[in-house]
Length: 435
Image (cartoon, rainbow, N blue to C red):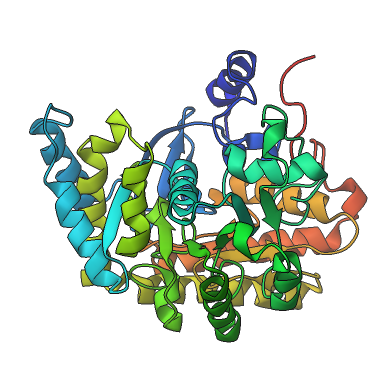
């Protein structure tokens, strides 16, 4: 590998951009400081080229889960190019937003209406605003990760309530102190604890916000209990499906369980990497958007809806979910097999479309960093996560499996304290700019 252009540009970025990048998950320090290529020049299918001409097969996060069909998918890109050539933004609205609303409500029969945004965080903020407007209440109970907006980070105004939900010790700097007490976390699949937090505050709760499934399949009884609890206290149940939608099936993962919320939020995979997000919901809840002010010029542009329509159309036609899950299961199996052959301790978890690989015990981060660096040297973007896409082929898995076997063998044969000559990957927010 050569990395002169790529690394020097990132050095410049850290002087010009706080944190060096716009997304925490794309900071090279999160993977392998000083080694992970920060920038790409082009991408196609499952291949990514950095600025120095190095080519990699992406067996990692695939656009942080946004690329569900493959990079630069011809069908989606053709739809986008046609939209661009016919005008992206005018004084009128694009008809694609109506077509997409019809498609989303058809796929989710419980939902009647749709509003759009262009990123997951703002879509979640919109959903919470609508829920508060619909109920006339302020407090939000939540489980899981739901973005960077004030409504969510307000949980840490009363301490480190987000520990275990987001990142430990996260300071809520810049969040108005007056929001203290308006966001209260609870842990996944713990209905008893949720009921304890609700007790005596039933008429204060505007919304219950959860990721219905992310690391593993959701317990059906838990989801049913959430529906019953929200109904009992008159709160709005919101499923954050920014990560889980279109990973295991067409539409929200909640469809697999036959459980319907009051609202659901989509982004990421619905447009194969193009900026698009949607909030869908029951009419009686969604109409509350008319009683508050939620509006943005860029939510009316044409590219997002055009990309989403093309992405969902191909996803359904190609039965993408079946292929994606098969690829994910194959990778999880090869991780376990290679670890067993070399006596290496690993933990393989996650849905087959959202795979996780961990190296438990002492030197966990050193092993994970070494894995990433060694996979780069073999021509792969490899990381502790793998988010398969439709473009992944069995040949990709086979070549990746051979590389994993070599890296696990080297890892097992080396003193873990001597694995690295570079810094370990960061585990959370640390100083990324020069002193």
